[in-house]
Image (cartoon, rainbow, N blue to C red; front, side, top):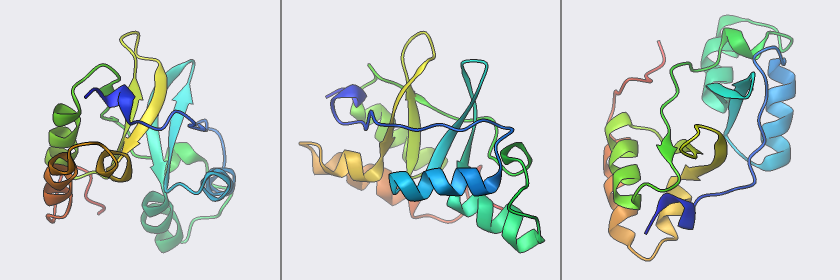
Length: 143
């Protein structure tokens, strides 16, 4: 099974110049904990509810702070034609619960989450991703 077979395609994005309030509003409207950040037709980051809590609220920043100041940069992604096993392993290795999905031209076409993987025909793929995600640490640890 490929990533495109179970990814979510209804993805809203924000820009680095948007405010945290605007990003949070998108999260509320889409019932999502992460929003891809795009600039000049390219994925440049992700802003998560955790980024807002740890890098903004805990530091006393205003809700008018720009997304660019607290977003996670160096975004990892998967291709829509990748095998779901590869995506599960990547999520496990990176200890992330969701990844943007791009096509071979590196244009955002969706997002894949643990929930999406858990609905696939093979529950072992979700188990693989969840086992790594549940471990402490990882490259995206908040400091």
